[in-house]
Image: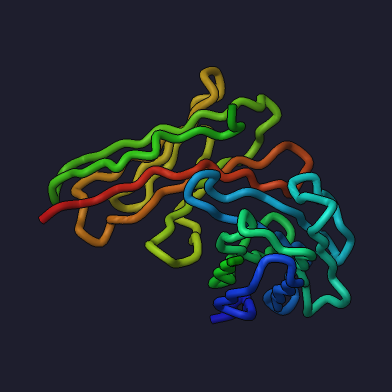
Length: 112
Length: 110
């Protein structure tokens, strides 16, 4: 089965450090989403891309978060500097056209 | 107020019971609707789409009420393996913006 690959699976970092999360969408998929999941807020859409172009990143704190797609096989989400409130599971998902997105296994981030 | 709202539960039901969840949405421009299932510490996975006329997939039935702006999921003859969190999802017309509810937790008890 084709799958969305996210790395790292787990990340523990100190407050103030830069964190980079990576996502390899399913080959051929042209829409990529970044979500953050916490117990309190549930799944929040941070940003999404279509054909590598950012369509909406209004859910993302602009001062510290950035999302990019340097090429069709890689999406990145960076946090700089990280804060304890950023601790969450970050999911990447990809889709093609009207198909429903397929999620990766997530990156579990802990900022201490 | 969140755009997509769900009762967080948990709903604790015995095996074989029928259980129903509702999900309300506030944006009337919402056009497409889905239910996802998420197991503990796993990623969400598509359960089923929700069509205007209602649709069934085995023991699962999804309904849409546009006038009242809610969707529902009915599970018949619940199994232990149905224990999970059920997330409703809406998409706005003309966009690819998938908005998730916070989920409803179901525990099916032996």
